[in-house]
Length: 403
Image (cartoon, rainbow, N blue to C red; front, top):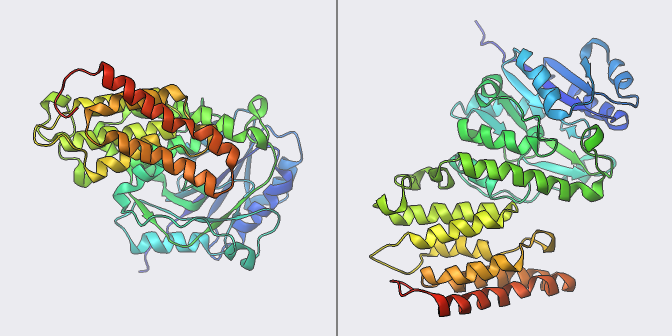
């Protein structure tokens, strides 16, 4: 008797995308291994989206609801699905012809993984084989599956997206529903929870293509244009990472190999080195996602964890401290008070100031080499602020070991 073929349902939420959704559906129906079900939830569209989807007949299941946002659309349909896997796909992107076959083959050959994920291509108007191969995404690091959660958290933008994932239905039951209060970044919130509970396996080659366009994003009254996309996204990321900091154990900011002993209060930890690394990594993550106050607090906690054997920082600590001083771009630069405070706290560990300065220096150097001299002017004061804070801290510092 042959082994039962796993079943797959595609779920797609859409809002006013009549001009894109047909191409997305065609890419799904044209798979070498066609999905068993395709569900489209029309989230209160006012254009011809519903008619466009209805034209596919019984090949696509269409549901309609008043405009409530993508999370509500997903939460309406996903609990009713009984297939083995769910593939969440966007109404403006394209699946490569063998995407589903490759995901299923990968998971079949690698039962140690719960779900699969892949990179993607970018395109604007049409996607051809030559055009796709000319625009691959940035190469992903060869991190082990255990580092998937850390990789998500340490990325400024979402590096792996749901369109490139095949997720067992049981994982959705385990992780829980989408947060309907998040009208943007709800995917990232879901992925962070998924990564905590389920094991990720990477397919190296792209399985889908991301369409770049200037259309509106968001639902109904919360819709915004492309120019506002980053600002709106940043606000929701801050909401998510405040929650992350409050709910994740400190140990989860380290790879499993380093999680032996970071829990408990600092004074009770017999292995302070691991606790220091976890605090630095969490602080860098909070800084990346626009929460400088949380980053400063973690740097302060880091300085309070003393190692009687050695007051100097390790190379790994130096790397994470440099990330606290680094700024991705002028829009994400924390206030200068952030850098002054970090400089003042740098006395707690020998070598911390030089690591902070290195991070800030590379930010400025990157913009200079790219010819973005206006950004150089904006970012250069971070170096002075670190030194100023250190100088003030030197005057005011107490006499402590390692200062």
